Image (tube, rainbow, N blue to C red; front, side):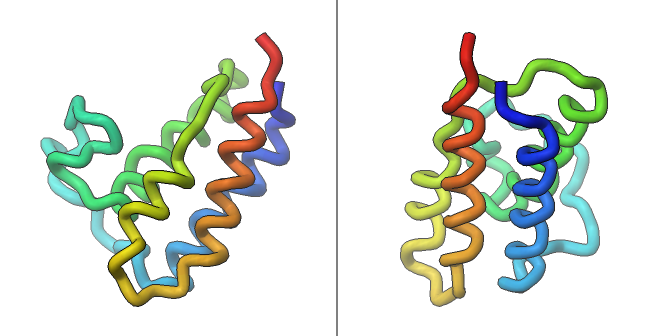
Amino acid sequence: MAESHEVAAVLMDIEAELRRMGCWQAEPPAPEALRSEQPFAIDTLNFAQWLQFIFIPRMQFLLDQQQDLPRASGIAPMAEEYFSGLQLPVEGLLTALQTMDALLGSQRA
């Protein structure tokens, strides 16, 4: 199982990178936007919003409650696709997301 302190540290890195890129929002989206059932809430949120308002809080909840973390993750490829046409300094964010994918993917059943 991925070490919870490593996952928590990467969550902080993801937040820091979103802030550095200017993608961190002060106000949350409407509650109905957070109830999407689509992968990455693609129908109601952009990818940075999904990270901030769904992924980070959900992972933090799992850590806080000492619940099992996902056993696989493919967030980095989605980020690469989303940010590919934007002129943003995404290298740090992509590195953090690749680290998260590796941590979650290295867990043992």
